[in-house]
Image 1: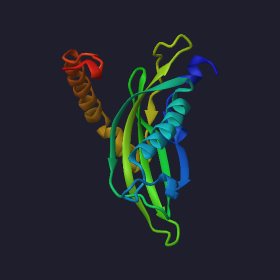
Image 2 (image 1 turned 90 degrees about the vertical axis):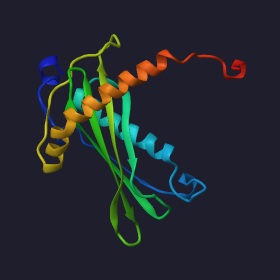
Image 3 (image 1 turned 30 degrees about the vertical axis):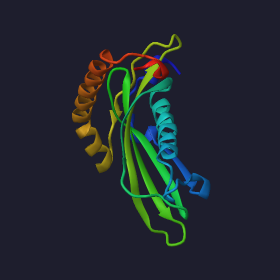
Image 4 (image 1 turned 135 degrees about the vertical axis):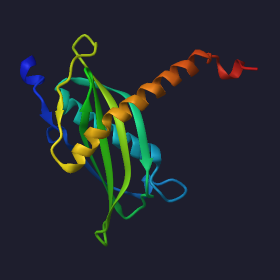
Amino acid sequence: MDEQERLRPKTCKESRATKILRVFPGDLNDHHTMFGGKLMAYIDDVASISAERHARAQTVTASTDSVDFLLPITEGHSVCLTSYVTSTGRTSMEVFVKVVIEHLRTGERKIAATAFLTFVALGPDGKPIPVPPVIPETQEEKALYESAPARAEARRKHREQSRLLAAHLKPDRLWEMV
């Protein structure tokens, strides 16, 4: 694929990825709900597929901007994670993940979590490279696209706060701290 084709604007649908899993007893914590960390790993996995589909290049997770757990996920559910690129910067992409649970016996479906992650596309030298613009089509995609600048500004402020905090931290060995 040449660079011009790689950078052509793409619809959100072109980056869509879906992962469906069944919740088993080994997926549960001592509250009998799915481990949050396990769900977060699934979120990062499916989001990374969307990012690479959009960029058609290697990508790395730059940040997990938010993961909102809305409902508990228990045994007897399936979990369907759907992701797609909602907006782009010069070299970065915001990826949205929607987590839908389905009670396998009743068929009832609910949104159990949502997440936003940021990925950066990398060239063969490991340096950031440009990504194509995204074209929203559905009402959901357009709403996420239109609200993306506010999330990008919040990410920028949060990143700056993290840098300021890190400047006051020391990489001491915990066992040597007084």
